[in-house]
Length: 222
Ligand SMILES: Nc1nc2c(c(=O)[nH]1)N[C@H]1C(S)=C(S)[C@@H](COP(=O)(O)O)O[C@H]1N2
Ligand SMILES: [Mo]
View: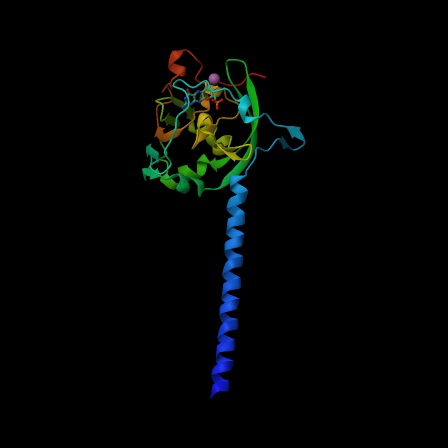
């Protein structure tokens, strides 16, 4: 009888020990993961080329850097869509991601070569089901800034909404939570702090700088 209890307790002890080892390994792994995120540093080189630094990107915003509270943040998608939706930050980030090295050129004469990472706009369009008559996309920002691009340009160029630049989460000054990576277009199409995307059939809609005389095409001339 005593022997049986002894054997049983021994087995029980080994069992508890195994569970303890397994769970503590698990938590070690996850804390390792978050440490990596916290110590994320800017990527400096891509395909053997030096990238610009985030500090080379001048803030030329109409009202200065905006601070977005991510706990209440929503990206509203509406207009000519079947399913108007307010997406949280995490819901946006669940879409297919892409990394692209793209130069941002401002009309003020500076440029920055940055490695952008974000989600395809086409993925978001699929979720809200864009109606066939939509041909124009109007972007809105928390600072009241707006700009627009033809729907076909966004799809042809496979444009992304970036949440990261040079491998780090966008700083507030650079558009956190999302900037439009409007490749081949001048800086004023790269709208930051986007909180609404409207699908429209008005190709003549003009954004903030476009109503003040800048070209609506905004093509970068090389
Ligand atoms: N919301 C918002 N986005 C904006 C602007 C702005 O004033 N407000 N300025 C634009 C202009 S003119 C440029 S050149 C780029 C600059 O981006 P950066 O500040 O990250 O360099 O942001 C663009 N996006
Ligand atoms: Mo600009």
